[in-house]
Structures are given as structure tokens and as C-alpha cells.
Image (cartoon, rainbow, N blue to C red; front, top):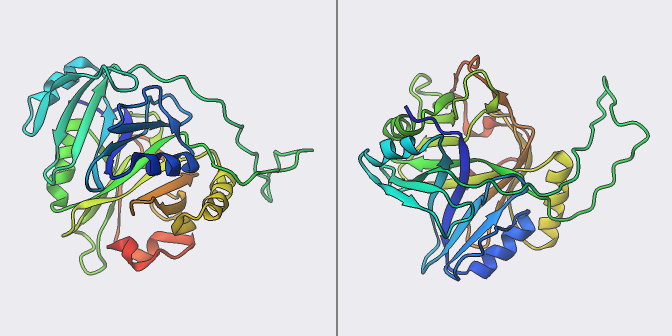
Length: 313
């Protein structure tokens, strides 16, 4: 079975690449090594992924899909033979290069498997700020001094898809990428019938993020949000103030999730798509046992900003 190594990037179609680039710069990304051809934009973070975000110029704005890295060319050959898959393609004009197979999920989302991309050189960033708690005070003779500015994002943490058939979509992803369930969502009136699944990559005993995806059954398929990790809580908060000062639309933040535990801050980009900064998420390994959370939508936030009603639609 093919096992995904990590989530690499998300892809959107937008009506104005210059507007999107300006927003993504303010959000903490920078242009990737390949600038695009005037029809697409590649943006990267500070980690070694060649790019985290691809924006394609089009007449309408919509979510296109996402990409995962895999471990071998043989994985690509196997995936290309499955229903809904395209051929193995060389990526000569894409940051990092390598090879790709593009596949379509049941609702039409384009999910890429990528192998052989050359890692980008990591960008310099500040160190994480030591946090003095009541029990432990590792920051000694050093004050915290944070500037309100764009906070560099390191990597794509996860993305969330609303799908028309939850079980079929989860099975599709598990067959192609070996993703594992970390936790499930259910409703209070049907607590043993999952309608949502948090999925993670399978690295055995090694620690990985609690989820790289959330798949949620709905009658309105589409993307809910994409999420990018920043260094620490000071990065979340300084970026929050900076984005407010720049006039962007706050969607929900700051708060802490229940499932995954991330400290979150959600924004709307200029085209209406929801995008998240996060830090301090859970990490798990093969010892983790999935649970079923059958509470209300409001109970998925432990503290902080209460999500607006359309956050759950």
C-alpha cells in the first residue's frame, strides 16, 4: 500500500493573482523559486517544501485540490492505475520538479501524489520564544519583544473537505495514501455513526500531526479551510494584529480547538476562502486510539473566539 509522507500543498483558482499574492505575503508566505507563467502563482513557507500554495488564474474562484508526497516512483505507478487517476507526469515547470499523478476524488477534488521533488532550502526564522509557566521558567534574563508583522508560516498543516459521501471519501483516501483515523465526529442524536474523520499520515511509532485532513459529510461539498503552522503563540497573536491593521477579514480567532488542540486564528482571503494560522497542535503515533466526539459544534472550541454560525455550514 502507498503511504503518504506528508501533505505538501493546496491549490486554488482565483480571478486575480496579484491580489492573492499580496494577501499571502501578508499571511506569511513568500514566492517560490519558480515564479509561474502569469497564469499561476506558487508561494512557499520557511520549511523545505518547494511550495505550499498554488493559485491558478481563472474566471471564477474555487478550490482545486491538494498534494501529498509519497515515497517512490513505484507508488506513482500503482496510483496511476487506479480509477480516477491520470498518468505519471514530469513536473519540469513546478517548484521542486519531480513527478506527479493527479487523481479525482468522488466530489471532483484533484488530489496529487508527488515523488522526487527537490526540497527547498529552509529560510531563516527566529527561535521559538521560551514560555514561562507557573511550574517552569525557562526564559531567564530575557524579555519578550514582538513586532506586529507578517508571521512566517512554516508548512501546510492540514486542510478540511466537505464531501457528499463521508465513508466513500475516507475509503478513497485510505486506499491511495494509507491515512489513519485519529478521531471521529458524530452528532448527539447518532453518537456511534461518524459523519467526520480526522486523518493523519501513518509513520508507525514516529510522531506526526494529529491530522493532515478532516473529511466531513455534508450536502454542500467544497473546501472548509486550509491551515498553516507558525512558530508559537506570539506568532499567532502578532500576525492577528498585523492582519487586522492591514484591513483583512477576521473569520474566527483566537481560540483553542478541542480535537487536535491547536491554538487557531481563521481569516478570509480576498476571495472569501477561509485560511488558518495555528500553533501547539497535538502529535500522535501508532499508540493513539481514535475517539468519537458526539458533542455540538460549539463544543469543539475549548476557549477563545466563538465561531460564527456559517463556520459550521
